[in-house]
Amino acid sequence: MVVAKKLFSYRLFVIIIFCLGYVWWLTSKDMMITETQIYHVQKGATIDSISEDLSNHKLIKSKIMFNLIGELFNYDKKLKLGYYEIEPDMSVLDFFEVVTNGRVATVNITFIEGKTIHEYFQMLNSNPAIHSNLSLQETMNLIAIKEPYEGQFFPETFNFDYGESASNVLKRSHRMMQERLDLLWQNRKKGLPYKDPYEAVILASLIEKETAFDDEKNLISGVFIRRLEKGMRLQTDPSVIYALGEKYKPPLKKSDLNFDSLYNTYRYSGLPPGAISSVSYSSLYAAFHPDNGTALYFVSKKDGSHAFASNYDEHKDNINKFLSGT
Image 1 (cartoon, one colour):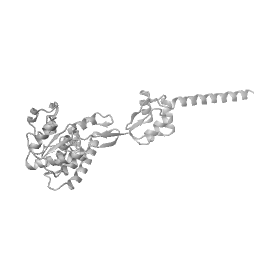
Image 2 (cartoon, rainbow, N blue to C red):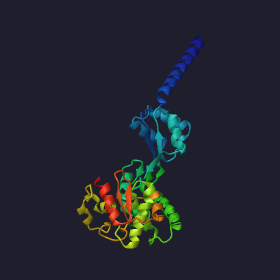
Image 3 (spheres, rainbow, N blue to C red):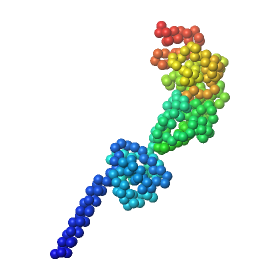
Image 4 (cartoon, one colour):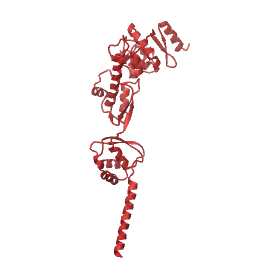
């Protein structure tokens, strides 16, 4: 009888311990993540160091449970360095699955056409997913790009691992630009007045800033090419705006056209010394395939498109028609 009572008590004790353990498991196995975030598994990280970090940030309910699961499944030897996306309602097991599968978090970086290298660099520096601790000059030196920097980077959306360096982002964009530029240079229209491919990029940047209409880019390219061939100044407003930089206060004034800079195409003949922005493929293509017409002038209409003219009298009529509203 005494033995039976002891056996019953032992069984009851085991059941109670099991039930308490099960309740503890149910209440401790889930993490306390309320919104998607990025977690960094750093070099030298261990189950203990990660549990300490997660506990300090109140992202797990129990360090004991976390370490127990980690030890049970030998996750310490499976951890992979990198940045990982962790989501709401994750369990500890889910977390370990994420940080041991090697599928790190990624980020899309979009370079928009018509922007300057300074705007690209500022965007990268303000993106928490991109690592950047160098100046623009240091970054350019690292990826072996010489001045002028404008127009050296192709505008595109790139996918990178979270934590990628700004220099690698710019390096890929530059490589893509070179690939497209090399191909277009090989298949360019004959007789273009370019000394090298970068001069086409310079012209493409002027086209880029002059119009958003792809179907008239080759027309504007034709105007610029013919003016270059005739020794006429390009007289394009965007080059003056670029030259003025932070001094520019819209709208562009007549007095601004006297600003002394090699980028001021109202004062200096030929192409400016560098591009004034990044260029889309359509603008780049237009620079290599200008229109065969006779237009030497163009003026903006109210809808942003342009009216073209082959002589100055016709150009003055277009100015009166589209700028004065007559």
